Length: 81
Figure 1: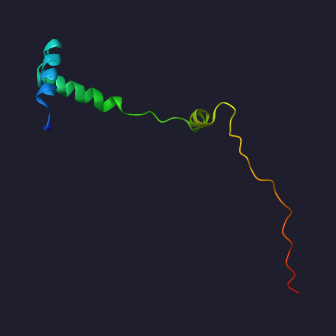
Figure 2 (figure 1 turned 45 degrees about the vertical axis):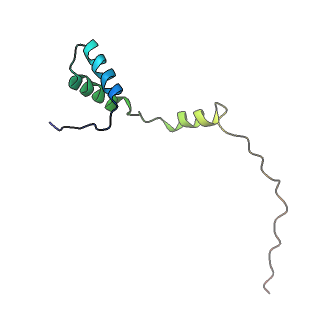
Figure 3 (figure 1 turned 30 degrees about the vertical axis):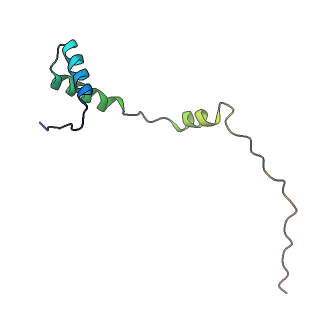
């Protein structure tokens, strides 16, 4: 089983974790292991369908209103004769 070392924790952080572990009836190591396992699966985002994303960003109207400039006349076709 792989091991992990956590350096740089403050004394207060370690003490709070130790107290929480004791309240849960676990050793500090078991408490930290459980917290890391839980955190590793909580952050996994489920992919969202593209239509749900579009509605989230553009609203239920299905689009956005753009202020487009009016079109002018078409260009004159050049005469190469």
